[in-house]
Length: 208
Image (cartoon, rainbow, N blue to C red; front, side):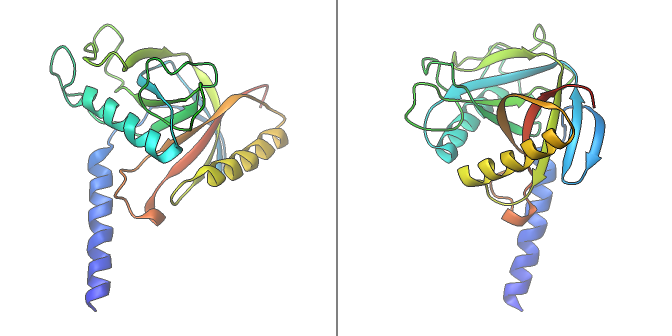
């Protein structure tokens, strides 16, 4: 009985904290939905990002902390910026680790980029300047993305498996994948594993 009560309490706390932590997601137009897949068209977006090396889990944690520092007041105006979802990370094979800050993978001169998409009410001109030079504010062009959604904890094998599944779906739709996959995480780290929403995203070109 006590175990059941504890589990119910954890479920409630996880759900409530997940809702509180991430209220806004980037808007997009859904072109095709075929669960667990979707093809989306995203408009131009503004992001805060950093680059880091290291193992996937360690790097994303480091990157999250750097970006959280910026949105929780680590900027020239000491201004708080609303938290959004998801936290996005992808490999940055051509970027040197000079301006390191968040996200995945290991002792390679490349590194990983981690991003928070800024709330839609901001532009590059209206966002405060980060105090930490590792944090960059960037404009992202409009993109068409193919997405596969899955739950649970994530490791390198999961990303590889989901990427392969997504590439097969893209080929089935007679589209072409562009660039490297991104991993999007929508929930805070204390969310119970089976409630977590994750997505692997790949940019695509071609006629749907």
